[in-house]
Amino acid sequence: MKYGIFLLLLFAANASARESFVIAHRGASAYAPENTLPAFELAWELDADAIEGDFHLTADGEIVCVHDFSIQKYTGVDKRVEDLTLEELRAYDFGRWVGEQWVGTAIPTLREVLGTVPEGKTMFVEIKCGPEIVPELLKQVEASELKDEQLTFISFNEKVVRRLKREAPRYRANWLVSVKQDEKGRLRPHTGKLMRVLRKSKADGISTRANEVVDSSFVARFKEKGWGYHVWTVDDPEFALALVGRGVDSITTNRPDTILDALTR
Image: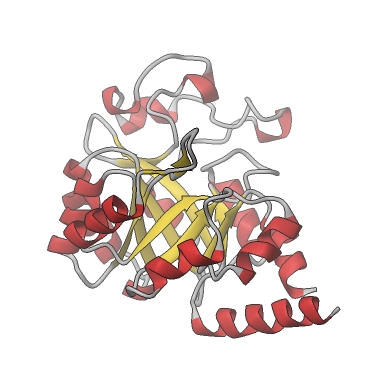
């Protein structure tokens, strides 16, 4: 009982000190087609603190929200996003693969997703392609009505993070990386390498898969240096509570309602 009260107090203190804690992964993707407007709108209805979406450049220089480089998973057609124009992509159905109730769902643009973000909420923009997206990306976010603090850019590509922090340092940018233990229990990549990349790219934080590596001492090493620590993708309420106790700054989940309920109950 005392432990539960401690976690609740810790969560309340953490939540008051950060703008985002529970992030809807590709929207409320457990309930609606990932990376679509219905998924993002549902995430807001479920009171998520933030949404996370994946973005690619199209052949005609537009920015669309989709995870994979190919649209085969969503449409059954094996074509790459970078080889198609926005008009061509709009001709495909990105909802039917999840269920008949989603038939007719179109691939959204970055502008459309930005337009869903309410006042006081935030958005994590994951860049799936390379640094070439940055000029158009910055042009579109600067033309939106969102405040700088409502946006965080994330990418597995350290070159993307570096260019963003060089050209628009006022925005937060986090480096995504999968950290694992090898058969001898050694970290791969090791902590020193992780920190070198963070310093070189001038990233504001690190985001890793939530696994056995993410214990309190590991998280503390980064936070002591001033970096934020974020994890993905957590749908288990008990694990989410444990991660709060380990000091993470945000939890990305497919089920924002479930995790919010666990953390506030």
